[in-house]
Length: 231
Image (cartoon, rainbow, N blue to C red; front, side, top):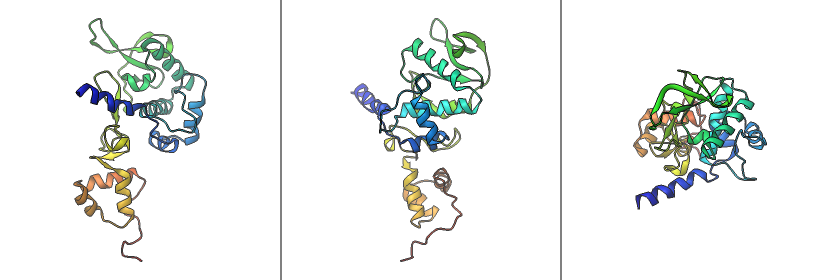
């Protein structure tokens, strides 16, 4: 029964739950960039269904590609790496289903020994056809991900590894949330006139968590807003 329940929620990882605009905001790229990357005929990102959103696994791969691009990795190099990992592992979304490291020039995966142990610091240069290299550098992006035992990403600290806001298909239907409360709901309460401490009390959050959610939603809590008492 446990295995069935586990398999059931994992089907959500592939549901087209996120609009392109939402995904772009989370990954910090333009919506046009998301569309263009999905339309490429190579292996940069998986093909997106026409007129539908993207799944959680596609969202994670988008975030990884965006981060690699920001670190200076060329799209052609990312494509080569993703193609390599798909071929070697058979995984449809390797950037979301394998633990990775990057130094900004090459894309890496932890190497495993004959017994499955991780070979510390020694990694595989995927976009150079499997050449063995050494690196100690880790992208901050990968510290934001929570992996299951298989190596797949199952949750993302979307506001940063040291923040509480998380996208998790098991919680709040995969919407950004903090302690189980959707950040969009917190935003709605604040814009309707509720004070930060009132929102915190109602949802059993700390005031710092409420403020974190508001900032994530693009709100500066000190800004002027319409009073709840106005008719």
